[in-house]
Image (cartoon, rainbow, N blue to C red; front, side, top):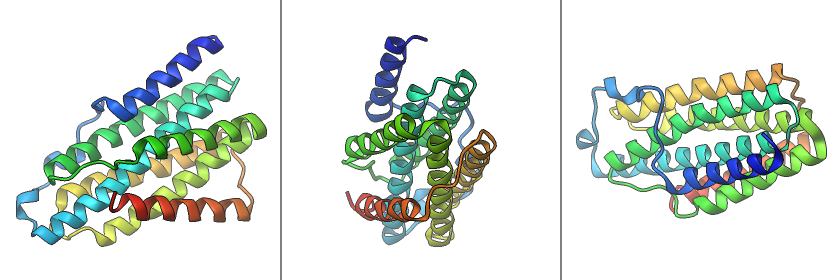
Length: 211
């Protein structure tokens, strides 16, 4: 694709992420889960909803990051890899969105802001640092998301098997994305940059828990 096509594709991806109903290519991991929202107490249902909203925000940011990096790279093979990862993240968007509806909850009202911020980070990384630095952001982002998901497995109600099944599959996918980015030539980010990313993630997750 030429630059115009890639810009249009990036715009389409953003609009679909923020305003369209995401469709998963893979079966929802929660389909075989025994517990449903009706078995949860009101407090447990609110907790699961808040955590799944945070997870949905993480997937919105992942879409933005992959889309911006696919836009900036001149490496066709890397672009295809990023686009494939984005398609898997679309599964996550669909699963978390479906689970939020089952829990009687909603996605974050600030999703456009989260998307714009992540897209900007990916764009700057790709333009200034090239593919190696851009992939470094993917590695660090996925590692941080994986850690968040692990903490959510500890916090989700024990009887919320549906949410736990979704989070477990997401965690597995994020680890694979980080490994793929490392194998593709990604570099470790400097410690101060990783620290800033963690601080930004804490602000985002803390806000998305409620809004």
